[in-house]
Image (cartoon, rainbow, N blue to C red):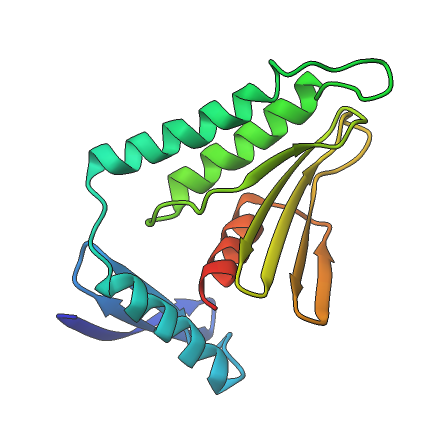
Length: 178
């Protein structure tokens, strides 16, 4: 790692401290004001160091991986369904696709490969597993229900009901930082 830098960003009258570590291509910025527990900084730093040490993905490999993920999502539309087990709706498919595209856009590393599971009621679940950690993105069949994230680590679990692209990206990072 060639660069360690402490940044002070002013937001109104409040100054926030950030620690940026990286080589320009691969880097992490830790918000030291948001990180109340020192072990969180260590976990994030350890995950970044492990990622930094991994061989960089070439553009072709990254594009190939992303196309594979999108192709597998699209396969859900081609499977056989009946009146007892409904096919994913266009709304569920579009929601899942938009979240995947947003993750591609903002994550600097290759997105982990999810399991795609139709829920039988027209929705789509995307599930990621890494060690003891599990993350599920639930995209309901209709606009009347909001997408949400389910996360679990051993006996600890929770739901993120206010789902945004940044919440998904934070949870994906949490998933791989074990």
